[in-house]
Image 1 (tube, rainbow, N blue to C red):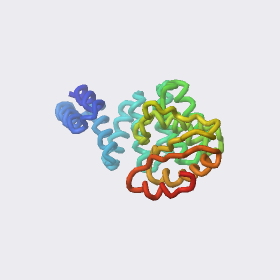
Image 2: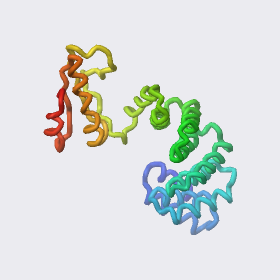
Image 3: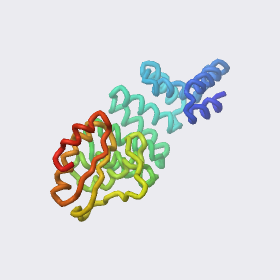
Image 4: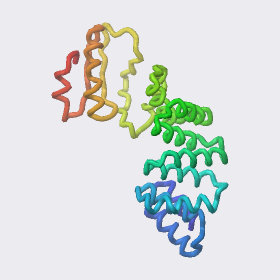
Length: 233
């Protein structure tokens, strides 16, 4: 039953997974994996009052299980217990140093304490393990930029590989502009994330136009009329 629950959990069938874990615990009340992953569901649903004690208990029962400590760290971070989160992620890493996810989660907790240099090291450790880890590279970009490291803009390109950042699809037949000469070009500016970013960065249309580009903007309907008035568009 627990194995079936884990499969359902991995495929996103959370309610089904919950039922399987509960059925497993009805048969074996002390089953650590059923108890742990049932607590993970509570964490995913932000029910930290239920999740944290259960995750702490299963981590005590199975102190050699790195994922148990990693998930406990995520729960601590969810309630702003960042010292505890960092300690839990470090325990997970000590048990499985090659876990890129644990290094990334450690970096996230360190950032919350404004320990950006340490976070950069953690993200780089994650990427050394898994170079094709866009969220790790995105997090590295943000930490580097917070430190004033302009090289972070190269890592910022990882946003294009992260669906939840809302990036638009490339337009067939239209090459992505990588910089360089703008004069005589038609450049399409497109929204990637929210309205705030669009309004914040539309000011660069003026700079492109001043360099001789014809600037076209694709904007969502609610702000299209406003964007049309921006200098350079």
